[in-house]
Image (cartoon, rainbow, N blue to C red; front, side):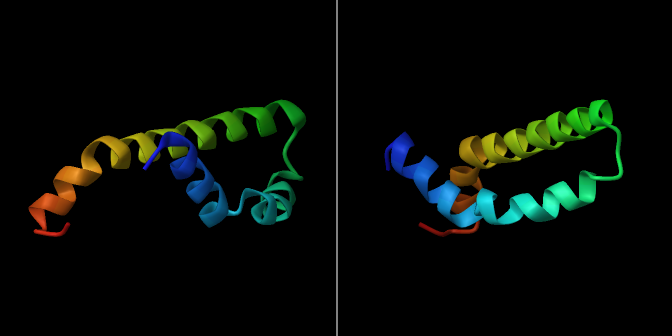
Length: 67
């Protein structure tokens, strides 16, 4: 699987455009500078989780005897 196909697959599964209205409605009561802080924090958490699965996912699957 190439990086482009993995990125497209993640984009389609996570549906960022469909989740955008929910995310904006949750952040609406916060001030603009706090919205940016929350947005960056959540993006970094998502990046760490995705990288963790990218690097360790193969070993977890092998541990469970899955291919």
